[in-house]
Length: 328
Image 1: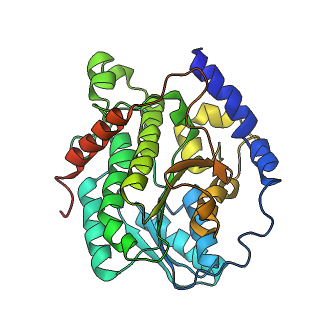
Image 2: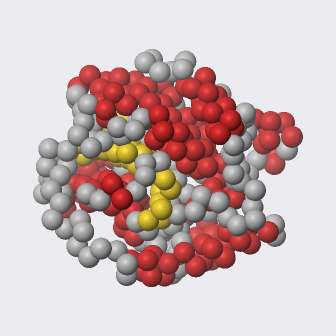
Image 3: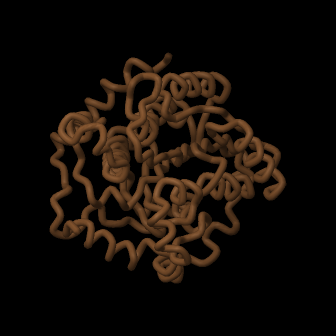
């Protein structure tokens, strides 16, 4: 087992499990979010019909927020919407059917939403996937990258104007501690050379691809924060949570850690807190959070840090990949 994998697993068992959350929660400010009223605020949550996204949707709806749930499956989305409405007594909850792996759909949604709504207070980039067989979208792009990275890039970039038109705008991206095992691939974010040509199609492994995507999300968050100081950007790690996505994409991991995984509400806690707390002034924009505080973005002795030039090259490449779809 590689050293970085051992280091990551040891850290994960200590910090990312249910016990890690329970230990961290002892230091949360008691009742910090209890009196917050978000009536009149508007939020978009992607991947909102199950797991962390559903927990976030319900939490914000209970605070009076106008909630927009971006989902892929119409039936599951409507069931989730009804659950949120019933449990929150807030009928101002809306569903938008968008496949985040299809950049044209993402762009079309942004255009339509921006025309209908003049402002957006919180964007929560929660949708994600870990597909373990090489699968392409309609544009010929690998779906993990298309969903986790390009979809996030297009959605956030296209919605910047209505975020900037809002009071206290925030962009929260649900990343993963898995990114700790990967260094940013600045020039080939789709991993075409690494995964397909060097290893061959039969060697495709969704786990490092997902980890690279999540590293990309953290870098995007950092770079957006520097470029748009009027918006608060944050990425966060939910820890190892027991969600349908984890059970489907990592069944052996899910089985082995049965009873130790966080609940969806525990996994969503920091994302919810980042979207609601009045104390963001204590933190810089563009950071990576775990359990309501900034967290390390690199493991000790593991060379995963990128230079400023590499980060700029990556963002330029993402812009190049996204431009054909912006405004489509």
